[in-house]
Amino acid sequence: MKTKILIIHNSMDGGGAERVLASILNRLDRKRFSITLMLIYGSGVFMREIPDDIETLCLYKSPYGLPHRLLTHFRGPRNRSRLRRAERLLAGRRFDAIISFMEGPAVKLHQMLSHHAERNLSWVHTDLEKYRWYDFWLRLDEERDFYRSVRKIAFVSEDARRAFLRAYDTPAKLEVIYNPVDTTAIRAQAGEDSKPDGSPFTIVHVGRLVAPKRQERLIQAARILKDRGCRFHMDIVGQGPKEKELKALAAELGVEDLITFTGFMTNPFPLIRRADVFCLTSESEGFGMVVAEALSLDTPVVSTAVTGVKEILSHGGGLLTGDTPEEIADALESLIRNPERLTQLREQTDASAAQFGIEAVMEQIARFIED
Image 1: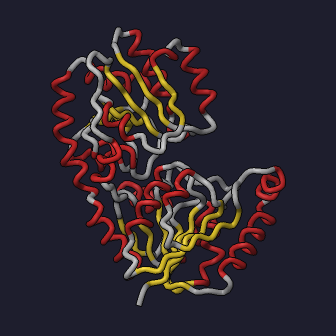
Image 2: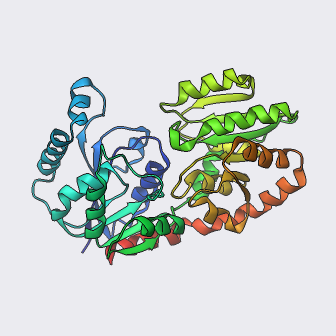
């Protein structure tokens, strides 16, 4: 008999967690699982990646529109509205397991619907000791009560699990499950185009333009590299509320001609594969999916020493750096001026990428849900 599962998530907007969720939904064994996906918002670029055979329930079409934004602003009405809509969509159905795939709003909705299953499971994608959703969405006491009530919690890195244990107390079973990386599919999407001869050293960053990603560090590092006489170009891929501010900073520092803001790209892999280095400047991560994807494309990485990435690079393939623009610039300059070192890192990428083989990780996920 199939295991009936309900997966709860916020939306399918263009983030790393959404890309991972789409991959899991496409790979979960249909002979073992009957899958229902509940989204708070039925929007986002990865909606098209949801397989047709998965029942998808959406509480709202999108988070936009003045009436909905006013409703969302008030905790009580917002929670009552979400619960009422969710219960209407579920129509009393029960599941073998409910899984909230992310923290924050998905956890709050899961908390209200937990009576629909005997087993309640959750995923943690970030360092909850340093970076958690605002109390506007989920109060700390509510979050702690929820994590005490679930049977199991999956963490995308050992560092994320350790950070959780320093901040929360729970009898739940805690398991580390790395995000699956479909190296074959990623390489196919990346294509075979090579970097044009004579091109400058290319640095690429992919991520939502939001405060925790700290792209301003990369722009400030660009100014430092320019002052040091380095020849390079940067591509910053993504969209988000910080876009206007980041573009203004690039202009203010006089590096707008060295940085291309590409906007969101459904398929950034050709750009990553042609880059000399992938650079991550975040102040907080749970896993660092884009780092694993870069390694899968044989692109070395320079990253701040955030949760998850430290584990990913433990097999080589990149450099960990401090979080100041000067330290980031130092690491990038060391590779710009030392191509032999860059080649050594590139030769290590396969060993790092092998940690996330999709078949083994998917079996681990299946056991996590079934047991």
